[in-house]
Length: 336
Image (cartoon, rainbow, N blue to C red; front, side, top):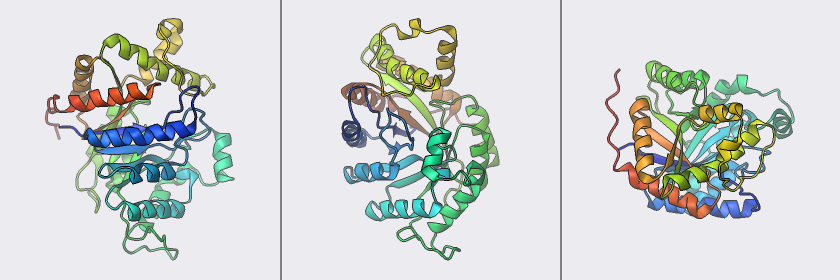
């Protein structure tokens, strides 16, 4: 069976606040643990009124302390925003508190606009071009015998599993070269997914962390008791995405009947493209769509995200999805 995991942006619903969002995050993690999800990842975004996971490592500590077995990770930390030493210390601390349960996914995008990125770093001198070197520096801090004079304490010897995140060929090449697992952001940027995965698998070099390629793909699921309800629930994310792409980032809006019909052809085409890796519908419909995606992409793991306005309905969507996993047929064997 393909393992399923959860990606949570700690969405702040319209009319709510970050405190409620973070309570919902822990509740979802606790349910996900009981339902058999493998890991629970949180993402770093800044300056977004609808996302409460900006201080990603802090939210991870909250989730890890309230769960027992599920792996807790960053999907991801935007490394150009940070000193590798600081991230080594943060994740070394998390690993010390919750040994064997922490993942560290690394991305090279800022997770924000340029103005916010400048406020985060005070300088843009450290940019995405330095990402590969930053990854190596962070990897060294977490090793048993760092080569650098400065030690990460906690951090040294933590050996927190590193992942490379990406939505382009760059991340695929880096993950393959370093022998690290690769997570592709197909849930919102699917354009180069198949090419990136093929490139990663073809060029993978075994490492001390990983002996063969491992691909995790992001996938949106909006599951409900009926196709009609699921289609309605999906409009919250659709509205939020259109708002973001048109320069009006917002809290997660409530569902809106006939929303897609109110859009012009340009907005509809954008949603069809960027959200093409999605399953929307009743359990039977979602099962068929999940099976089709697994058969065509053959991932080693799926990272499920469900941006649903009402928390109880988001829980229900994840519960339905968890129940479908054992009913899916294994993907056909990949050709070398």
